[in-house]
Image (cartoon, rainbow, N blue to C red):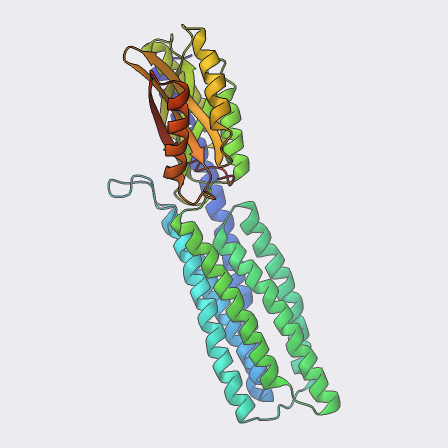
Length: 393
């Protein structure tokens, strides 16, 4: 299985590799953000000038939106830098969650920009002023549409590649801005050729779209700060790795804690034969920890053990019978950690009960009574479990 020294050496080597990957990720996020700052500041300047010269509220609001986008990129840069700080005594799991906080700040900025622009648009509807467009203004707006499409696709692709919510939010916002700019261009053309001004009404529609986007971004980010289930594919991969060890009879109760994008640690329960010695279990858990870390970058801080009866052949029959009783209950998702002890006589196991059950503890009590009726000479101990890594609960 390998000595403790070998295990620690391997973890240290992998930690260095992970550090390089983190550095690459941070540099990519910062580069994309700097590109966003430069593009949005330039666009804001051009649009503000055009909006003021043509008396167009929609173009001015679009310029303000570009400035908020530039501010979002700056926040992303600051957040990425702070999130990269090494773990310390006060924050032993690092500062990765700062990225979620910066994503939340960006969402709040987007929401504020939407509410402000909606207020301005309503005032323009009540007190209309007809804009006066020029060919130069129309060309600048058309160019802005193209720039925003390219910028949005680039920033979002980098965000998805490096799992950066801040960049994904910024890229999505930029793509939405391209639609807004295209709408502004359409309104300008309509006004130029028909004399009908839709500026204020378009500004109101744009504002509603911005507000909706801000609310969705804020909701998603708060959800991650509260703690979401881990990605199902990651959880499945970890279980397969653990189950690949021949000494493991089953892997359960995987709990993963997220400390920033792609920064997970957690714990798991494994079933092993009751004949394994303490040193064999120690070597096994260290080998599992090392393999999971190497293949997923997830550090399992705790591996708890369920013992499986292998000495008494009648236990397998008891397990099969009790499993039949248990799974008659429609809310039972999983049964594990089964063990029978004769002196004192008790049966213990864990159950995962669906959240669809009105009262999960009542379901446990029902099942306990049914098992006690089948095995009156045994004390029945059932623990209520939750599978934190799947959505089947």
